[in-house]
Image (cartoon, rainbow, N blue to C red):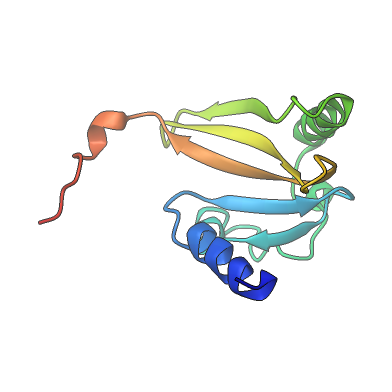
Length: 125
């Protein structure tokens, strides 16, 4: 499979995630947001191409920077719990993106629903 075909698979996975995913380069610029992020962050969307510092308050930006610096310290440092969104009952995480040599090349944010009882396993009807 070519890298282009593989990229389409990964983009398909990201785009069909129900929760918002925002992918950033190491200069804190948004390089991609999935459709759920466009909807979730409506007040500042589209985010792609923007620096995080233009859409985050200083305190949150500081926490993101600290997380990325922690990712740089060790290839085992890859996931940080960022916050709990009480309104939507979701947890926000920041995760490292590493290349095949385990070099940090970026990071992304995603939400996880805290209510596993909201869906039924294999509900195919």
